[in-house]
Image 1 (cartoon, helix red, strand yellow):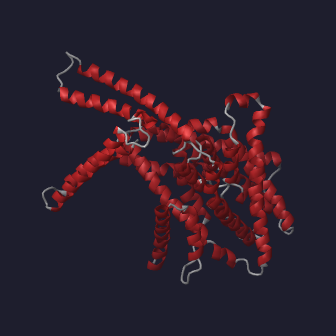
Image 2 (cartoon, rainbow, N blue to C red):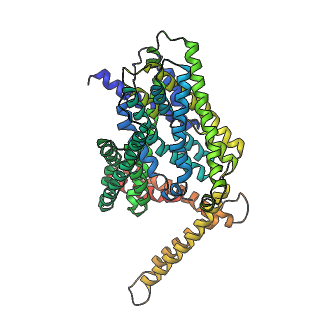
Length: 529
């Protein structure tokens, strides 16, 4: 690799992280700002063509991003939301594929119907990264977030399978409807089995690794192992990765505290870097895509793009309400399993969360070079991806605020449940302390016992204070909040002393690192609550 190539390789992530830092500082939508920045930079003189390599996206970027999202999701909530997630991740993707295919074929008659279905499969799966990020920040209800997360985890598998079938139909290698259905079920089933097998193996290995650094280093390899193992036997690598992530995320509470602390930091950094590069790459694709459209009429291209953009939005808007309410009306079993009827506000929010992402562009770039109207399909994919990111992405926060969707009740219920759990845990801890320090067991210092007892009681008190059980005055600082604020100031003063002593060569850097880590862990506990 020569110096200029190495510089290009470095500039992309460096620039993407700089834009992401600006977005976080200004509290703007990071995906949107990255796309806009990529669009602008692609036309600057001297900027090379960063062509999206589909193999790199599907192998390097997709597995860890899916794995991280699955790791952070809730198995129990996903299980409860399996019906709506399935209707979106499978039913809506297939419906969008079919509708987009017929509409595209009607607009461009010279495009074979199978090729039009390939385009439908390409732009069918929404990427809920930005929607989930916005929803969490603005307090979208938990079930709505769970449905969006579950949809984004599984819809890529449906879309990529339909995509492969459509490509095979264009090449004349696809079979009939039953054969296509069999291919889909086989790929999904094998992906599920491989994912479960690797999850069990990885779970055993990670639990036996006592070193948190090594455990998290191994965990970075897990999504790639699952994806490659599944793809090697023509199974769904996406499903395999998702299953591994959900399983290991569910088991993470049984890992060591060091593994959990590092895991959160490792995957937050990985998400930031990968997502920043991915969205910047989306914006950078405009110039090379337009270069392949010589001879096409701009007005016609814009018409095609606008029509397909409206189609993907309308199909989702038409699909979500009936798929939400009809099963409840027709099935007593559904009403029993899901007693709470989704509010119309949540349904509207879900209907509008249809932003497309990098998987669509990667699939489009993976089309064979001799594929019918390949350059046109690339442009239409890009237009739909960027259009949904801009229109739906910019309006999504406004919509959440306008509809007054809030998690105030959920937060109160969570705080109430936590307070009860903390009380029970504190009682168990104090009972165990009494057993260990009872007369005749061992000699103990009473000061130590008092400190341990106070610490256990304080944790339960903090939880009750979040419910308003502190001073009783609205807006007044509770004792727990006061304790955290004062202790943070004390820790800052302690750090200043240690740094000064290091600078005066009175303690070594190794000593500084050790005491700083102790102070950092204590401050991390203060952030809770």
